Image (cartoon, rainbow, N blue to C red; front, side, top):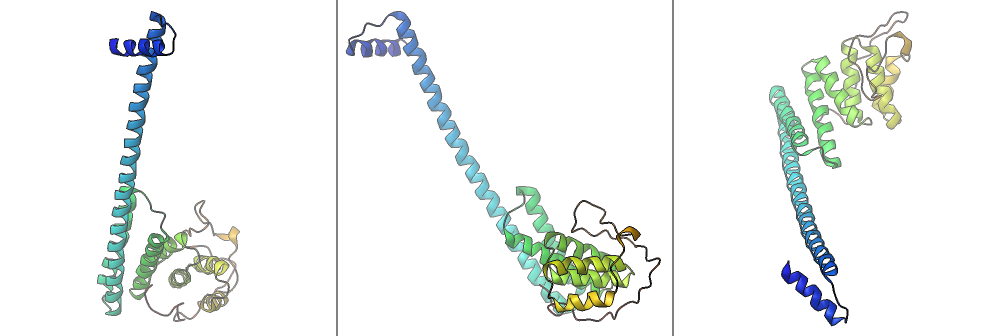
Length: 244
């Protein structure tokens, strides 16, 4: 402090101004403030570097898990072609688990590839479950897929097909109608919509069950006051019978 005060006195002398003790104290205070400001700026710069490194590590973790999930999807597709349904479901489920772990550990990513992969895994699970005739589980996966990507024709078709099998006419129509809003020229969906018959009466049992218009509540809906003839069950799915 004495040195800083002396420096202030010398500076004043160089400019031809006498410096009393009060002025010397002010110079000392200013010097201390400048020192603290410089330290604060250095700390902020270090924090910014730390944040940047943390974001880079998070992106690396997310990318690595997404790549692993992609490998799981490819393995599941091979199992499906070999008619190893249990193996296919295990692979697809592991891929979904990896994506969920990445989101929980480092936060959801903004990459479209990760979302598309999650949609494909749900849709492929649904495809396997159709072959196993596990209709309600199939509907759940299709619901998850169209919630992320409402225009996904395969998921909508599979969800509607499974809903038909358990007499959920309104759910089937909802899957098809929602997808047709985005893909109005999809021949398979149009054919399925035509076979499903009249639109459901929203006052007669249909309720999304949530504030998300893309979510379809899986429960048995009322079909009173209308007759419904079940359509043929083996219409071809959009994109044929293959995984995404």
